[in-house]
Image: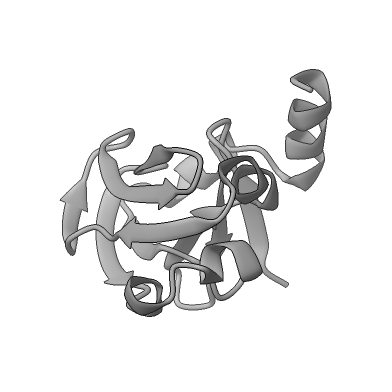
Length: 125
């Protein structure tokens, strides 16, 4: 069973068996952005929480992706460089952006679970 958490900025984080966290944007976010035409992925390395690490450009707007938790970016989804539409086609699977090794694994518990995110969406509709 995977652990999935969400941020108020509509990012999702999935805890992998390796202990790394895979990060992407939610279906809600990709629908709001429209067709994604470009993704600038982060460099590997250490980042603080809230640091802007990636940029998305869509037909509607540009949007920054922030580091959801402090840690090290250990992998990026190179497939997005050639096929940014993966973000729209599969935002919760193939359209992931990067993987991080979080500095403090307990910080994952500070983020919303699926029920909390669903309530957040309903409260902010």
